[in-house]
Length: 71
Image 1 (tube, rainbow, N blue to C red):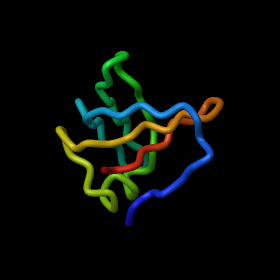
Image 2 (image 1 turned 60 degrees about the vertical axis):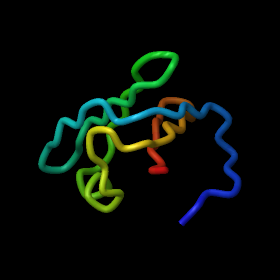
Image 3 (image 1 turned 90 degrees about the vertical axis):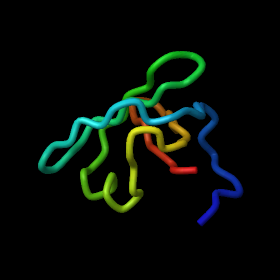
């Protein structure tokens, strides 16, 4: 899967610095050139995206939500 276009303007490319896993949701800290961006996503999504420390991702920020796209 590749993203060809998206309407979210605030995008921060970076690498996963830390994952704090929970039973239902997990915190993903993404290190970007502008600082750390933290996303709270379901643990199921962490597993489906196969996120790990060092994964290259894009943090997509819209309003109060931060989504993660794996590169």
